[in-house]
Image 1: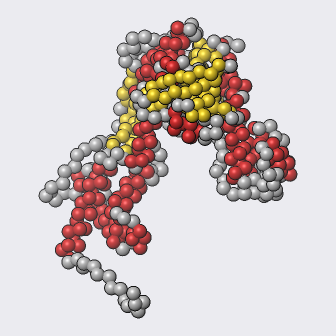
Image 2: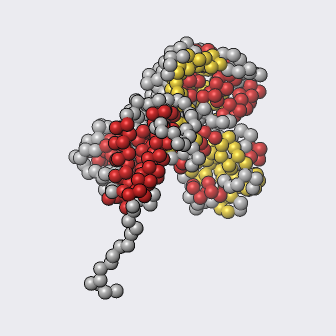
Image 3: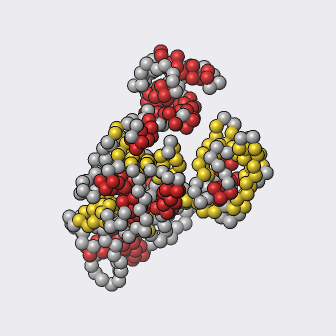
Length: 500
């Protein structure tokens, strides 16, 4: 090609009536979306039909948006869609701007962080977590040294039916040795489509056992076991099947003569309110008020347990909570405390006392919005307050708050959040650090070098993101392997229900 030749871009120039027609179409699209959003914020889902009516969709939604404000919004939208320099890098500028507009009005709400618009990918993740089920064989396992140990076998799972036990060491999957496999690769080998078969070879004591199972959908939001004669129920979320899972464990406890129970709701961020009510019904019985709900007009509605075929009774009950116990977890905690006198152990809960409704759109995105605030059976509000435990027990910061995610590196006599992270983990791991405020002292340097030596790392004395990651892994291992003695919250809950 001749470098001196000029390339002339040929483009179709639009007549004024074409431009006006496109603007009108964009405006109509924008107003439809805004009308829907405004109706959702008001807590009312309506159908809006646009025809030859001269009335504005915004005006008909009952909002106070003036024509000038609407025009201003439209002009900004038009400028961005036609003149914005970086718009050239976006394939579908109108869809992009529309998504940003929706995110702005739904998610940038300082007075209510729980009203939120979620794009399809995030919405799918949320719905998967709320389903409370996975396809596989129904075990939880972890890596200890060079072995894969089965930690949990979920009730009514293929693994339980096949005879797998807690403490089994996994050796092979479908005849393939897993000794050199990464944990994620092992997960892929074990999981698969529902209805397919898998054979897992395990070591139990001196025996080697082959267990053939048929993969299935397994409910994994709840787990139960007996410790020192006390029934312990762990509930990670309030999912579709959580009440049924809980009932199966309660039946197992009853069959084994369990008289006292601990319900562990730590790090349970909530889920379906109806599920929490169903679980409460299993313990408090029929027709008991679990919560009151106050709407934006101040009207209060009571929500009670339904007709319960069987109530499971225990002499003593403790509920474990922490700063991440929220929403439906707090609801259940309050109901069991007020109806049954359950003792609450841990630290003050999150304090989310609002109720959200959700709308799913054709593209599978979701808009969830606050419709009410709930009150406990004694009509106490917990929103932004939380539930104060009867017995306050704090865990070490290293297993409670975690790393700040600082990506910087530090040498002695410097200051930074990464240094504070390392000091926190080193202290938990038993190293001698003189402070945890983020100042890289000489004592911290000595501890860092000793940790590097113990881990078989180069003794540089420098705190890097990789070194912090190694400390996190070491902390996780220590916590997991020593939980029976390190989990002081659980120990207190067991003590309370046992009357020791």
